[in-house]
Length: 246
Image (cartoon, rainbow, N blue to C red; front, side):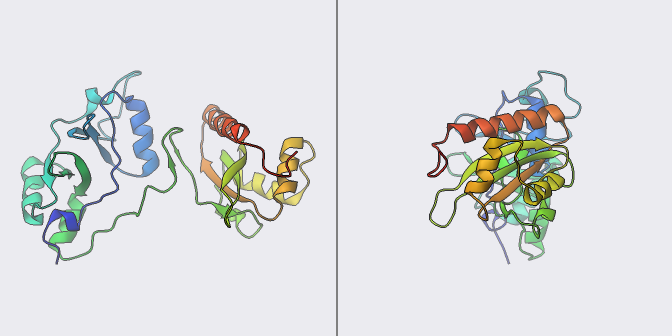
C-alpha cells in the first residue's frame, strides 16, 4: 500500500503564470480536460492555484493573478498520504501542490489520488497531456494513417486537419493543413478524388501517396480555425522542401 505522496502524485504538471490571460488559461484547462492548475513564479515555486470555476466568468483582459486562490497549499513528496489527506480536509481544497526540497513544484496530488492511496488503490494518471498545443491553445488527435478504415477517428464536425509525413527513420513533418467545416468528410474527400483545384495539395498527395498520416483538432469557431490553419501552414512553408517536391 502506498504510504507517501510521491507514490500517488501526478508528475505531469501543467502550470500557469500570474500574468497569463485568464481567457487563455481557461482555454488551456478545458482543452486538457483538467479542473485546475497551479500558478508558478520564475523559480517554479507555487504562488497559487486557479480552477476553471475561478475563471468563469472573466472580464476581457483579466489576468490569472486576479482569479487565483493564494497561497497554494503544498506538501513534499515525503509527506504521508494521511497527512496530505488531513491537510486537504482541513483547508477545504481539492488538491495539493507537491514541491521538492527547494520549494519548486514537481507535481499535484488530488483528493481522488489521496483517497486511492488511503484505500490501497493505484492512482490513475494519463502518461502525458496528449498532443496539447499550448501555443495554439488546442489539443490534437493521435497521428493516424490516412486511409478509409481510419478516417472515422477524425472529428465529425468543424475543425482543422494536418497531414503529416515521415517516420521509419525519416523526420516527421507537417506537410499540409487546412480548416474545414467537417474534418471527417474532408478527409474522405481527400482519399476519394484528385485534388486538382489546389496544385500545392495535389503535389503533397502525389509525393506522399500511401504514407500520409493525419491529426486533427475539433474547433467550433471559424476565426479560430483559420488562425490555427494559417499558423500551421506558415510552419509547413518554413521547412525545407522535401526531396522530390520540386
